[in-house]
Image 1 (cartoon, helix red, strand yellow):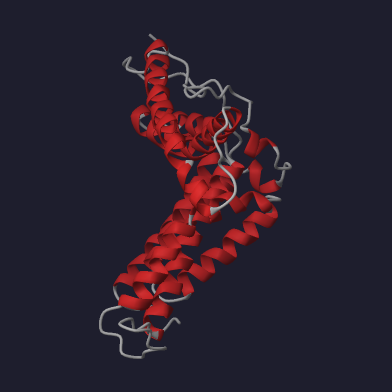
Image 2 (cartoon, rainbow, N blue to C red; image 1 turned 180 degrees about the horizontal axis):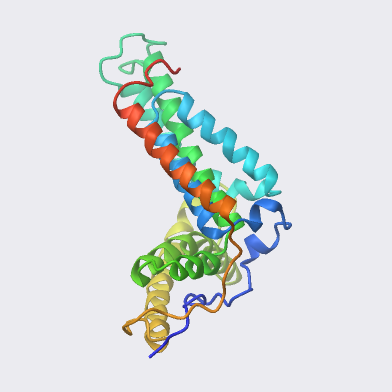
Length: 276
């Protein structure tokens, strides 16, 4: 039995873009093969976390911003950056006030002793988080899950791994969209979700339960859809959509992948300690 590639496994039909992607103008970066953009995103994330100091995250952020200009992406990065605020806040609090072994105190605040060393380490860690978030955003804003899933499956990647990658990419926009829908529904029922911080905190609980239940319902619906499309059937699937690729892009993928491995190897061996 031959099954069609599940490019619409999560309600995304081929050629139909999510709202947050369809609003972005067509640009040269978007015309790259989905696998090429995936390799670039992985390279950016690995270098941001693998190269210590300021160089790794700052270089990655520079590359991401250049690609964003090439892809005509501007304010679309904002939601992804806002999502990192809780993590970044905790990084600054823990490292600045509790960094082990640091003695260069900035100021004494009762029992708390924030240090310059902790502040520097917190800033570097925050830059890595931002670089990772922006690398994911760049991939998500220029490549639909259906495109990436179809291209990976055409290359022979296992269908279960392909589904996991596609589900991870779809998760953020689907959760954001569902949260907005639930918030509007709660407001229509008289729930106060605006105003002071306390009122907003009270509105989180009525939002959380429907969000979790909706996510579980989505899992059940996706499972039924996959079975209806013969997801567990043996044999390789027939992919109906092929995305443009070229020898230059194949060379680029190899250069980026091998270059990333080489940089990480040099970093682990301590040969990049001279970098700031």
